[in-house]
Length: 162
Image (cartoon, rainbow, N blue to C red; front, side):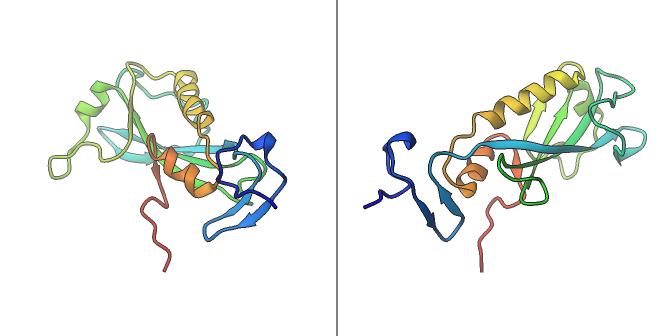
């Protein structure tokens, strides 16, 4: 008799199993979430929001101490490619002076998850995101998504199937 996949017995001690639930297929052990891609939209006080069509890894703001960027992070199960399954998670990255330059909407400057840095440093930003993603420890994709909403806005947050 196989144990329920959500039991507290460590994965390596559980018998092999494969079960289907209402939200996702469950496998033995925990899922490993990976970053499939990151794209961005940048904010310039003179121009407003603009898509960064170039590689975010090589992009540099005009003033590294004054910027706001909205990141779209495609995350998925390590065993699948982006086209096989990933969800979009969003976050803002900004400096305090970049936030001060943004226009507010009804008294709100940023409405969403925000990482504040003193200066633009892609390696620091990437390591911060990768560190958060690598700590995700759940058995189902739904549980992973819910856990990741601590740090990112999830495209399916509060989704209710009809």
